Length: 145
Image (tube, rainbow, N blue to C red; front, side, top):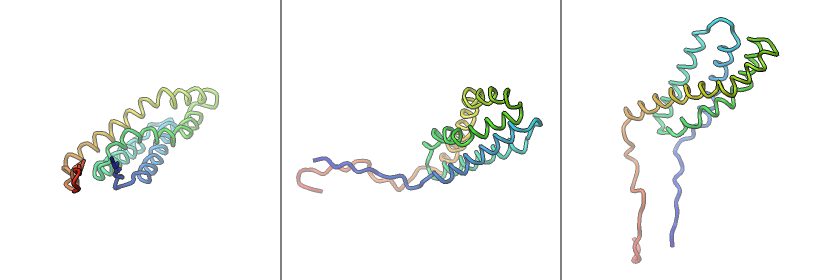
């Protein structure tokens, strides 16, 4: 007889990820909608990404780094398209926005992934290994424990 026991993660990252994705959607909207460069918006995005990376590293949730850019894209693609239409005009903005939410998002997502990954990795290294784990597998013989 085999019993399979699943261990659930000790912390949920849904709310912080949604907050980070919302902040990134606002940052991307501001950067695209304005004709002038917005260094404050860029720094806000960098700081938000660093804080979220610190949170993920501290909570040992590095796997969330892989899904976070997708969540950010889900939050930001409509505002990004609208920002492109504000910046370039309606007709041209439709095409520029389409490019940004498809091809351009590869670059944006890579930058988010890279930034989150580096910060999360560094925080996990400084935090050290978790000492709360027991053995991965416990085997009981035919005579019991």
